[in-house]
Image (cartoon, rainbow, N blue to C red; front, side, top):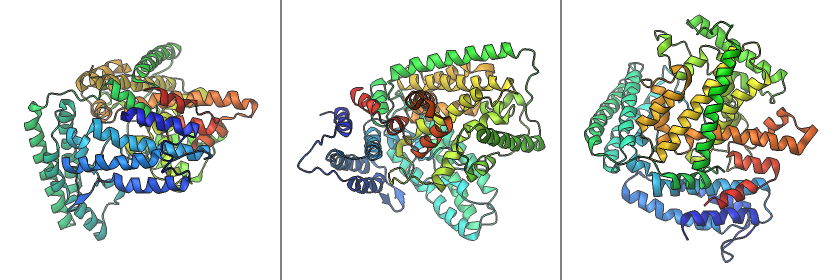
Length: 546
């Protein structure tokens, strides 16, 4: 039986109660938890002299041993399990499918130089780092500067591994994916700059400073090697439509195919652009919005934006307010970016500096992360972030949905020009998603995806020579379905709201929905739908997609 059909059979068994192997079957949920814990330990690569082993031999062994976990999962009979327990089964199945896809298609350790980037100065706004990342990444944002002697020693030890990681990377990177290779050069030039910045802040720690410089030297040498090899890399980098569809159904549990998503994104792009023009027509007599112009104005307006948004959420009964939510948003205000002409500001800054309240709605991410830290889910399988970015349609979908939902709820009624920003944001998400889809269909090169997203984003704010558009398309090429997750997740959430409103009738409230949605955890919206409505039809649909 082909792998795709194997997993379809398993999906059908979960909702029908069958068991693939009666001789070895188990129907204990605790056995699923045991399997999950053992799987998570297995998923981590073996360490050789402290360095993760991604050699061809090690990966072949991992791929071979994955089969035993698949067999154990297939032997589980979920008859009598609660819906949340069956949902947990699907989460484990999705993660196993994620590793299968990595070995069968993505092979990031062999095809994707950026897989070996080690240095991450800022925190991701989703539960885990976006895209495939080698084990042992150094999250600089977790350190508090100036460093204590203990922290400096710890960071120095981690940085000492960078030269060895990059030596192994030269041996492991045997793929011919042109766009992934060239984009990796950009990623390592960024790492070099991040290390240069770190070097300037650790001068009081001699051993650490030496580790930083050696890591930077190794990074610069790796860039030269990538540039030397780049002319020999000639293959397209996309996974192809058939494998993209398999990934959607089996890993991210998305009930829309590649073809359906193209239609959705085209429709959303048209809707966003048309709605923007109508808003501009309605607002034509109003003055243009002025960008934040100083550090003092930035501090004042961004703090006021958090205050206004939190008050709106409370006054309109949008969601139960937790004590940590205000501080979670306020901690992400950042500082004013001085010395940059307004015309050269990156895309999201163009919106943020016109009305800071708009992107506070997208800051639902920070509520999610604070909730995970302070109110961890009772399920041990949902306690930690899902692997392979399986959370993306939930995390990015809700953050994106909140923008338009809060607009319709009245957040910008006193500032009509800010409604224009919502439509610009939506147009950009749709345009870049079409780039994602067409890159993976091998209809677009990465440069063509960049040009398309820039062309179809209003007002020229997504500049082709900016870092945002290139960074986004590179991520989406590395991580299939991430670029579409913002809008696909938003649409799934909107559908779920409509379905629950029909089910609950007069008993439905937005606050009750939001609280129940949050309580389900950072899992695919398809599975949240099952829990909240009791309807497993989308899971059955996933089983039928192949």
